[in-house]
Image (cartoon, rainbow, N blue to C red; front, side, top):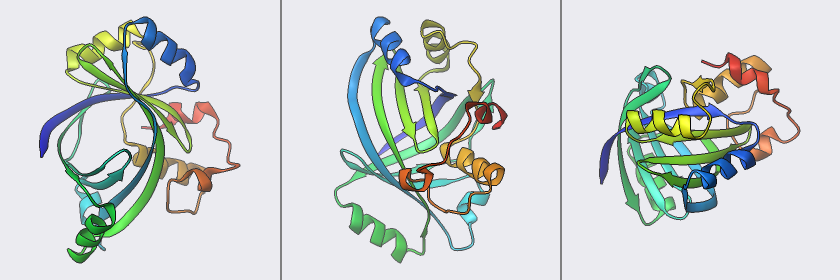
Length: 199
């Protein structure tokens, strides 16, 4: 099991191609090419985990991982939280175990992720159903240095998770669907200025 304190910053980036070019120019190494992710976030039927800001997630991309994340602390747009993760070999069986323990799928969400390594930080370029984002994870000082190297030091930071953004977008745009999937967002145009209003 991998236990760690996760420290990261998240930014909305309309077009990922120029950022990928800046990453390569800065000497970043492509660790994982663009990969599809399927995630299920679980909760109790009464929503106990969400109320405590706890994440219990099962993810399938090139492997299958079960992740626990504790409540987050945000300081100057950089989020820190305890994270524990374990690799499992069977998505459906793990899903069945979680359901047998009383957890239920709270939301299903999808994304495409491209992962780079730049010095001490991991930089991911995420294509979400509602827009494109960059996350930089690592030691706080290295995150600040990477933001500077990539010309993102003054870029607005988003202090919430993708599901937190999704909840706000659902409210702002009066969206009725539960899951954060590409199919659900097909034909929905999200103006970039919306992300300036997310907290």
